[in-house]
Image (cartoon, rainbow, N blue to C red; front, side, top):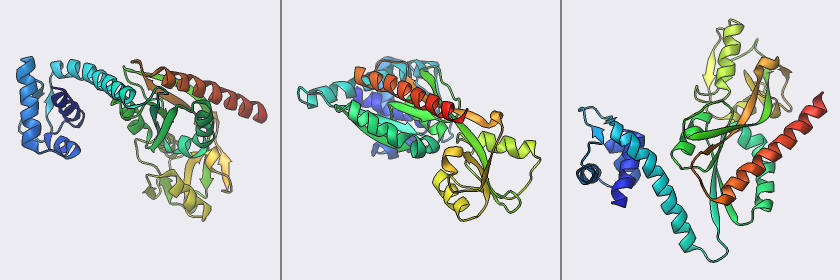
Length: 280
């Protein structure tokens, strides 16, 4: 049954039997068969197949999903515990949005590595919405975002402020913008609307590519002041000051990961206070 539950989890998240089969490396009929067996075992309907590619979830599937992700987490924790020796090794996957990953995470990772030698950290870069979804789906343990997103089963903690600037020459263009699910897109869109700017836009889904183009004198963009070193820029007003946030699930995890989260909050608070004091 555990295999059926894993298949159910992927179908629930993708809302698509074909995509689930690709992720699980099994055939679509096998996915359908496992879901059907799970439905028969529980005597409920989990998905409504309307003939379209995307399936609809039932209220019973919503309840089951909330329990299943916790169950799978517990199994992963148990598996890690029995596979390691007495000095238990904990794995912590971090999902970080681009600006945080590039300009804040490196020194923080060094501190985490030194403070928690029993934890094996890995890092994935994605935009803010993807980070939130990854934390929700238990594919990352801790997330860092630049956009005040929320979800019922997620704790969100403000960490530190990030000042945005206008970089490059708006008279030359084009405007270099991130995709609409990134943390900075909202501010870029608002700036363009406030200034009634209708200029050519180039969407680039990577901060470092945008910074690289700006350093070569190409384009203009709203970016973090942390990324603007060596680029002609002007600081925007306080309404273009945002926060970085730490995201973690409300359900319990390893104590060491909880301690990591608390250490991160204290470390970021000390850094933010130091920066704030230096600029006043």
